[in-house]
Image (tube, rainbow, N blue to C red):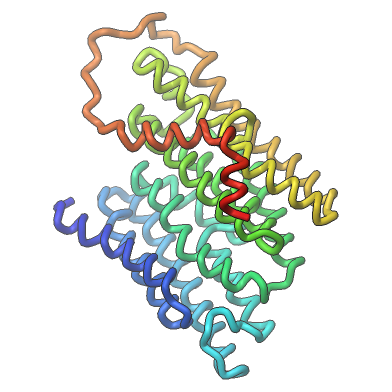
Length: 348
């Protein structure tokens, strides 16, 4: 892709998200979401492959549907209540429609079906943008409208997403689909705590973005899209494989890695709110996700492809990809747990 065109598209992505962040009027927020969608579509379709075109079409249709429902809900609220302000979504029909549309935007269960299919058709870098940056604008709106949403609806969305995200990833062999189900499960953790402590939702979102970036950038460096590829990757870059294993365990939420922090704080908060059953179901759903992360770790570190030697192969061409971003995201994805008290002081 022409670098000038790429700069324009990435700038439009930033503009769309910033516009939604800054808006207090539904029309401006809707406009930001639309700019976001239209800016990523050329990035998704740049491969000129039927799979990429199919993924782009599915993404466009789902996002356009969600945007239309948001506009309809905002118009309904303005018609019934005479109010266009985002924080004043007082009509129950409008608030339910908005949360349904925003759930479709970010891929929450039960409207998650598009996400694994779309992610599977994209290259890893565009998939990274879709899994991280594209979640920010809808989440900004979800956090603003959360006080007007029925708490039982939010809890149901969160529980269902963690269960579907864990259950759906069990049988997958494609890395991008596994990361898509991982995304659905993490979104569930963020939504479940939103009604009690929105700061923990933001913390979980930030940690999720760094952990997912580490996973995508590592797979990009290894040029791996299937579990089979990982079993022969050990001899190419042993250091990266160790980091990758730790990053996946962090995604699974194992201590003493960063990924344990949001899960621990969310379960603690749910217990404080006297919801022990919800906390137990969330913890058990996290075990489902942990299983498929452990599958990946097993494939990477405990299996050897029959054709490889037991030493690093000296003749491989050097990798020219930049590793600075990967180094930064890996550090954050692995080492933030000891500073949990400082982070708690910031977010509460």
